[in-house]
Amino acid sequence: MTGGDIAGLIAAGVFALLVLLLAVPILKLGKVFDEVRTTIRSLSDGATPLMDEVTATVSTTNQQLKKVDGISSNVSDASANISALSSLVAATVGSPLIKVAAFSYGVRSAFANRRKPAAGRRSR
Image (cartoon, rainbow, N blue to C red; front, top):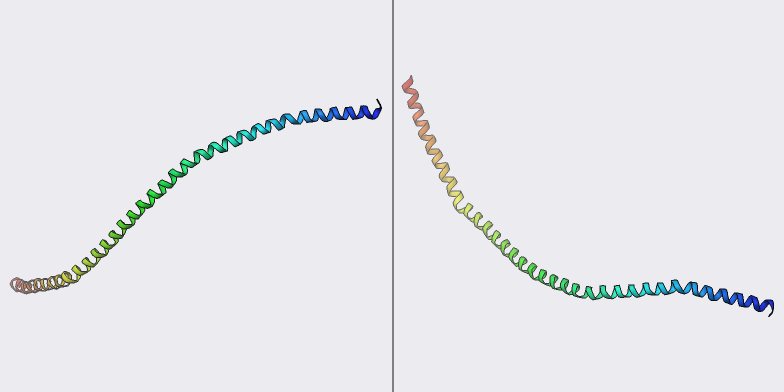
């Protein structure tokens, strides 16, 4: 054996040792990747029913919002009708009531003014 052969054997032994030392972390990394794959698969399996439930909830919510939209539309129509009715009542009843109130005030004032001078004459 020559010196070159011995150096080659030492280099081969160091390379084999290096391969063995690197094999352990690589195997552990492979196990980590297996766990990650298993976790992702379980998350995916759990997410599918969750997505179905979310879809059903959104569908139900949309149906309820359509009902609320109809109710709010009816309330809007009813408030417009009430507003129109109050305007009609104010125009129909309000003007005559104001005239009656003004007339009654005038009559009361006339009677009050008529009595005051008579009361003033007596006291003189």
